[in-house]
Amino acid sequence: SGSFKECIYLKNINIPKNTIFIGKGAFDGCCNLRSVSIPKGIEEIEEEPFPVCTLVEFSLIYKHKADKYKAIGQRKRLIDLFDKKNKLLAKIFFTGNNNEFEFYEKLLNGSVDHLCEYDTLFPIRDETIIKNALVALYRLEYPFELQGNYYQIYTNYLRNYSDLFAPLLIRRGELQMIKRLAVIGAIPKNKINDYIELANNQKQMEIITYLTQNISKTRKIDTPKELNLDEKTSTNWET
Image 1 (tube, helix red, strand yellow):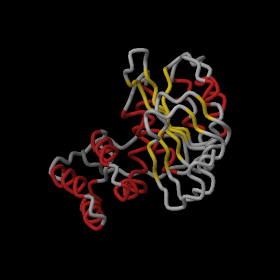
Image 2 (cartoon, one colour; image 1 turned 45 degrees about the horizontal axis):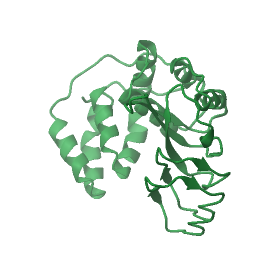
Image 3 (tube, rainbow, N blue to C red; image 1 turned 30 degrees about the vertical axis):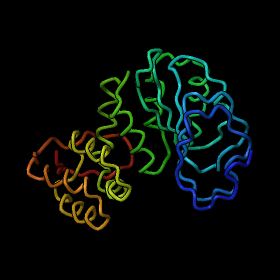
Image 4 (cartoon, rainbow, N blue to C red; image 1 turned 120 degrees about the vertical axis):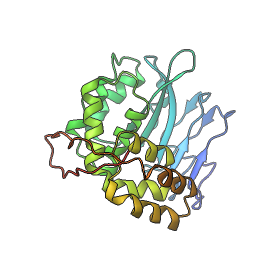
């Protein structure tokens, strides 16, 4: 325990694949730790190993019990769902919303019937725009068991709000998520030059290349449908 205690400059860590045990308070005092990726082979995790605000990513076999992860108390979690043959099915992002707790417990207990149980939570989420956007982006990127009505809800949300969170994705260098926004027509056409300039200032060369190559592929699409939420909308999109 306390293996990385007070490592204040530690920001991101992929725990080595041969690790089988994480002790209590292993990362105490790592106040700048943003994300931790836990390997599949982990066998035991003691209580409160990570700072509460750290994003923790770990893997589950869908519909199989995984008690070893119940010690993880982080509000933000990214769970990779695999089948028995080790095929990645979906990535499920948990924001720490109270409405997620029951579904999270069912997921760890292997008792989820269908991922629509997770999708039904989206319209009642009371979260920041970026957290909701990450929920939507991961579901669209890995649409396992994603029903058509929820696909539309996620798509409309991203189209409505992309001008508010896309700059953050560019600063983080999230090329794959930028591509996903483009695929669903959720990059505002009137913002793309601003995004290229921002990517240039941040030295995000892959994003610059992608946006530049796609700047001429704009098209008009229908205005997003109402979400029955208090949201602003945009009407011009690039894809």
